[in-house]
Image (cartoon, rainbow, N blue to C red; front, side, top):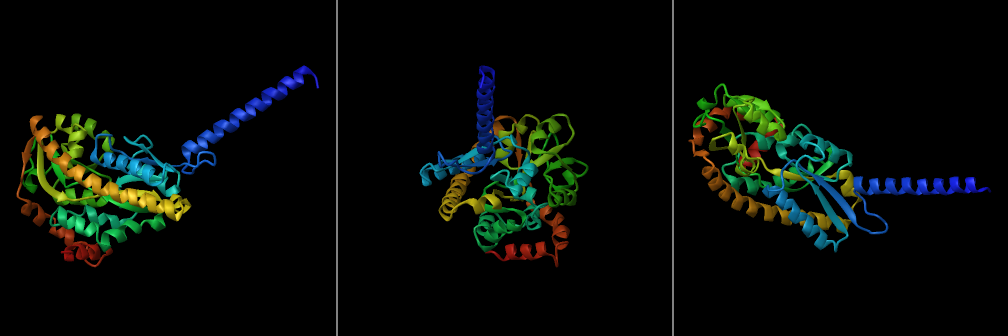
Amino acid sequence: MDRKAVSFLIVGLLLGMLVATAGFAWYVRDGRLDTSTSNVRILKLAHSLDQSHPVHKGMEFMARRLEELSGGTMRIEIFPNEQLGNETEAIEQVQRGVLAMTKTSTAALESFIPEMAVFSIPYIFRDEDHCWRVLEGPLGQELMLVGESHGVRGLCYYDAGTRNFYTIDTPILSPDDLQGLKIRVMKSKTSMDMVQALGAAPTPIPWGELYTALQQGMVDGAENNLPSFYSNRHFEVCKHFSLDAHTIIPDILLVSETVWQTLSPQEQKWLQQAANESSRFERKLWADETAADLKKMQAEGVTIHKPDRQAFIEKVQAMHRSYDGTELGELLSRIEKEQ
């Protein structure tokens, strides 16, 4: 073999090794599986919130606990701020097993899992304590598993507080104040039905685009919880926040059913334990940050209103009755009976 042939052979071998290495690196980055050399299983978790949000901090706590519990053999890589897609896209990736985990609002799940729509029905919980009794009871646990046939399973709920209306310059003191306003809602039929029942025009806009939409006057306001309002600096545009507490919609941590089945029983136990602990950690953090954000909002010139909720409750009774005789109606009845 002459020198030229040997050179071509060496170059070919080097190129082959380079391609193989790059392909393997892509597989490790893209996948959910461990490597035979490091024996570390890496789970990717994507969500739409920023790093200052209590729920993100709760998931960071979960990642630390999983690494501790597994002795470093399992790790979670978190991608916030819609880095891997918006809520709907992340759910779809989890369904396909392309993404291991995501955190989403249960409202965003209703187009995938119809039963989740129950959380978006206004004024179904008497208060937050009632809500958590339901979530931690048989019904809440059942709902976490109804997505198995859709490729996802719930690991835990995260506190997302009460959802309230906030507006640029029109204080919401009664349902009458919502008449004719364009209010941003999640892409949830039930949420849109609720806003419409209260008299406003529901306008679904992706969360990441809402600040600009408010700034440009595309919508008159939105509805969400206190920490999300503050951490996303919506107080720079909206100067009225009404504590009407129309819904208590929890967040839920989802894992791909495909990925779950690749985990050993011990790995499943570690992941579930880390998720459960993170839920308790996040709830305390949520309460602390909500109280702190309320003071910060007022310091930024936001007026906090405490309207009479009864007028809002009466306004949505027809919406409640529309579920009679349906699966959602049955879920509503079970929630009402929870003491």
